[in-house]
Length: 466
Image (cartoon, rainbow, N blue to C red):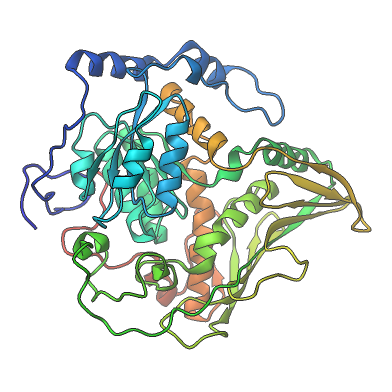
């Protein structure tokens, strides 16, 4: 890779960025930059009040967004803007407190139309970059939003924190358990706000429901069933070939050891290959398991079992399309995960949910922003709805960037939930039940399983925290 100048810390001996881009394009005058940085350091009275004042059940922090000026705005860069990243770019720009100033993608076809759509309401047209290291070199950028493939999530988080950026990283927050530990260390070492895109943590009605669970409204709650069902088709079989001219395949792979390009993996089906993805458990399971762990008030498990397989298609996918996983906790609590990637509905005709079973009834948290309470006869007796989507989660994150408090989905909580997904996948891949330490979730007495705690990296790309 051509050299550019300096190497961003956070990756051991990382190759320097490519040349040919102006890292300061679109930067405001020096005086404006100083004013904005001072604002970020001191925050606003509204943000500080939100961070320190009392909160009612389900209440969200009161953001000072309405008063934000172009100088005050938090400057955001988005990494990976094909699909999920495009939605996040629009959602960040919809918050008066933020402005997307950079788009980063290794697909040169992507970015132009999105950049044009973001140039409105007094916001500039975001600059487009190919190499994330150029983005992190830009002093204008305050926040990095990471929506690249999973193998990039933690390395980019660690690099961004070392470069002084706050981070909003899509789920899962890591590709391996070790990466999650390093992401926490990077956030704490560099004093950065790092949150994961587990939006239900910020949905007002869901927050209220969890508070009710924790307050004992359903009596003792010992079990949570999580499930997801989809109707995914086959990805077929393809032979390795040359990457298209519009794709920087080397940068797409980034920290992952190099593999030949294969067209049926890009841009989405990498999810179903262990080299880059984490299967359905790490894709949609992490959303559900995060809420289950939150509601039960548990942290690390003591025993994990997993079963399933690829039952539907003979193709180039590796991860299971049908999976059942159980997580046992020292508090005598149990979480189960049912993943049916190629079956359009689960046993209760819903395609996503978290079902808490208590002594006085049960609670179902779905994907629509609310929850329902059922009596012991499974009759719905109460339903509460609220806003869903990204807006409240992004508002919480931006408030934390301004105030310095920890977000609803702080990286430490994010790692604990993501770790459960990693452990479930490791149990599946080894074909063995795992025993783990309740103090930290580390695998005990299984060298083969412990080897999957980390991964190999391309030379010079191993994440480090210094």
